[in-house]
Amino acid sequence: MHPISLSELIQYARRHSDFYRRFWDQNGFDPAKHFTGEMDLKKIPLITKEDFLSVPARSRSMLDPTDWYYFTAISSGTTAQPMVCFQSCFPTPSYYRFFTDLLEKQASSVLIIRPASYASALIGATLRETYFNPGSIISLGEPDDLASTARLAREIEADQIIARPSEAIRLAPILSKIGYPTEKIIFLWMSGEPITNTISELLKRLYPRAMVLYIYAMTEGPSMLGMRSSRCETLDTLGPNTYHLNTDGYLFEIVGESLVVTTLYKIPTPLIRYKTADRAIISENIKCSCGFEQGPVVSIGARNGNHSYKISGVTFRSEEISSILETLVGLVTKDFSLHIEQQAKDNRLVTVLHLFIRPVVAPSPLIIGAVREALERKLFITRSLSLGEFIRRGAAIFTVDFDENLSGKTIHPPSEIEKLFSHHTPHVGS
Image 1 (cartoon, rainbow, N blue to C red):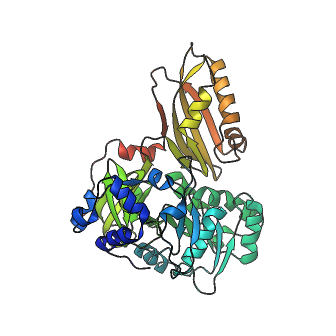
Image 2 (image 1 turned 90 degrees about the vertical axis):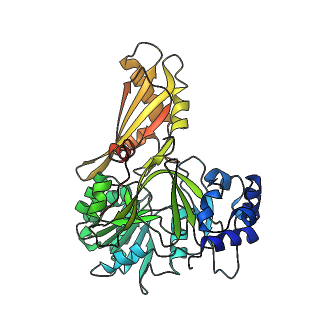
Image 3 (image 1 turned 60 degrees about the vertical axis):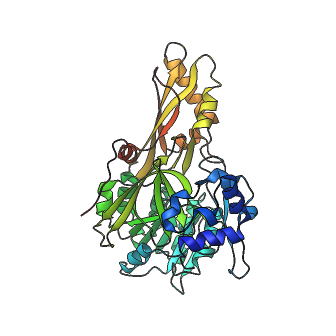
C-alpha cells in the first residue's frame, strides 16, 4: 500500500464513498467547487468518531475484492462505544524501519499479548509488510492468563513481545519464576496505553537487554501515528508520552488542541480531517538523540474534556463515576475530580487514584467510607474487573478527599502528562 496525494484521496472518496458524499453534502462541502489542492485542506469539514459510529461499519467502508483480505479491528471503547474498522495492511513507517536497523539481532520468535479483537488485525494486516522476518514464529498469549502465556514464551523461546506496557510489566516476574530469563527478550513493542516515566523505567529495569518501541496508534488508522524507542532520550525531556510523528502517510493538524489526522491511503474508511479528540502538542524540527531524521514530534494528553482515560489496562469514564455518586443521595453531589498517577513498588506497576468529591452535608469519615464502598463495588474499569478487585490485587491505591468548591466531572491524567498542556508554548528544535 502506497500513499497518495490529498487530491487523489478526495477524488477517491467522492467517487466511491456514499458515506463521505452524504457527510459532505450535509456539511455544505462540494469538492468540485471548494477543493483545488492541499491549500484547501481546512475547507474540508471535520469528521469525528461519533460520525463514523452513526452508521454500521459496512455502510461506511469501501471493500475491494482485489485488495487481498480485510481484518477486523475493534477499538477498546474508551469513550464507552467501541468502533469496528476494517484493515488490509499496516504500512511500515520510516521510524519503524530505522528502529529495527538498530537491533543487533533480529527477533525470530514473536509473542503477542493483546486481546483477540486487536491481535487478529495486527497479525493479518502486518504479514503483508516486513514487521516479522520470514521464518519467524508468531504466537498469541492470553492477556487474562499470564501464567500460561509465560509458559508459552518459554516453549517458543520468545525474543520479541508485543503487548500493553502494563501487561509486559506484569509478565516479567512470572517469566523469571518459571525459569525463562527476561534477558532473552531483545525487542518490546508497546502500545495501547499512555507512557509515563514509571512505565519506561520499569520496562528498562525488567527487560534489561530489550530495545523498547513505544507506539501511538488508533484502531481507525492503517499505520502508527507516532513512534519512539528507549533510545529517544530527547523525547523523554519533552514529555513521556511524546513520539516521532509518522509523516509518511498522514497529514497532521491541531484544531482546538485536538489532533486532527488525514490518512493518505486508500483504506476502506478514509480518514479525511478526522478529529481524534486526543489533546496534542506538535513540536517542529526536533533533532532526537536516537539519531532519527530531524522532524516533528507529538506529545499526547488526555481526550478533550477529560471525560475518560485509559491507563494500566483499565479505563475510567466520568459518566460512570458520576452516576454512582448520584446514588448517594444526601451525602455527595455528582461532581468529582479524579487524579491518576503511576508508581513502581517492588518492580510492580501501581495505579494511584485520588478522588475529590463535593459533600452535601458536613464532611466526615462516614461519607468517605460510603463513597469508597459504592465505587469499589459498582465501578467496573474493564468489562469484568471492578475497582475493588483491582485494588485487592495490589494494582491500585485509592484515596478519597473533599473539595467543597468542586463543579463538574473531570479525570486528570498523570501530572507529568497533564502539565505539558497547562503552560504550552511551541517548541522548535535547532
